[in-house]
Amino acid sequence: MRLDGLLMPALARIIPASLAVGTVAAMAGYWHAQTTAEQGDLRMLAAEIQRAVPSDVLAADSQELSRSLVKALDIMAGGMFAIVEAYSPHGTKIAAAVQPGFEPFEEQLATLSHAAPDRIGNYDISTLLGQPVIRVFTPLVARDGKVIGHIEGVRVVSDEELSVFRRSALESAAIAAGAVLLCALVLSPLLARLAVKSRQTAVSLLETHVGILEAFGRAAAQRDSDTGTHNYRVSWIAARLAEEVSLPATQLRSLIAGAFLHDIGKIGIPDAILLKPGKLSEREIMIMQGHVEIGANITGCIGFLGSARDIVIAHHEKWDGSGYPKKLAGELIPIGARIFCIADVFDALRATRPYKASFSFEVTMQIMREGRGKHFDPALFDAFERIARVVDATVNEATDAAVTELVHQMVRKHFFSNVDGALEDVYCTAERADASVAWSHHLTAALPAAAGGRSRA
Image (tube, rainbow, N blue to C red):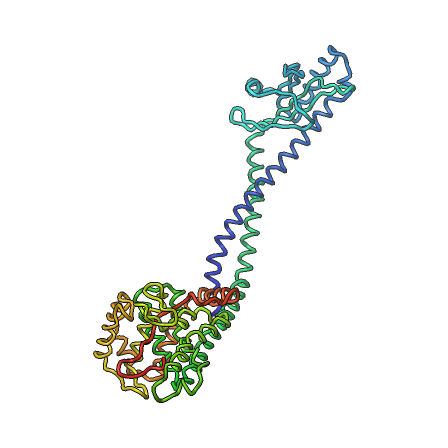
């Protein structure tokens, strides 16, 4: 996978996420700028009040205090404050000073609370006559510690000042958002390269997984004097039927794995029985039937092969419950196994074996129709019958190389078109297998003896 193939998808995901983060950063920047400006104003206003009302004023008697406060308020109202008011501890106005032009604001102040503040620097932000108004409250504390009232310094924020503040806050927000977006744009190529390497590694792991499936399947087939082409044919037929019935992707991949490994248990069957040219005794039949449990044990011990266990352990079960090893019936047989059963029987009947000739397509289908509802899931068999002639024309006369390529195309379609999903299937199965090799409850469909001959399957 090339870098340019991932760069645009990476940008398509990173940029929206960056914009979202940038928006949050912008809001945080705006809030920080606003808070900083407010705190700066409040510190200056509180300092102005403390400067204008020195402690010796508070030490005067009540009459002198009133005159001193009026003088101090006049000084303050000529500076930073538009309005300055002094209140008693009970909220009664003692004195006030107003800059010319701000008289309407003083009238509106009467509608607000004038409770005594609990500390120096308390503030309130209100809106009067459509203008932002900042009120700073400072207690008047006598030398003996007694609170004798408080002063409210009122500053009306002008439109020009408000515009400057907003512009500054927006600039801070834009810088924060731009930094996030720029970082995302700079990192996108690096992230895309990492994604390419990660995807290449994932594909390599998946190729290894599929290669191991094929290798194990071929090894089992060679033990049975087969080249392994049977595994490829049944894998393709089973996958094609699974597509016809819209089997979910995860189950379809497990089906392909199981088709490769369905006879892996024959590795543990003695040659004297597996390759015996004559009829098997009852004891030998029991030993031969044990290959399903051997196969399930093998796949159970190798975690990443665990997805094939359903087919391996139960590929001789039958719809009517007469199969082995657990005599499961109906939908108790996993659907992947029921699909594989149909594919395996079809190939067994159509193939030429040392002990039997190939049955014609018509005879094969007639034999299989007799097993509908007995050997095979009737609904799945009906689906197979719809595609049987096309399936037969595709694989029956194909060379080994052509059949192998058909399966590789199917694998690419269902494994490599969704590498992440396929690897998740592999490793989730491995984790389950590591936790337990209790495979006895995972069972699948059957392969019958071919009519007129004997099958070692």
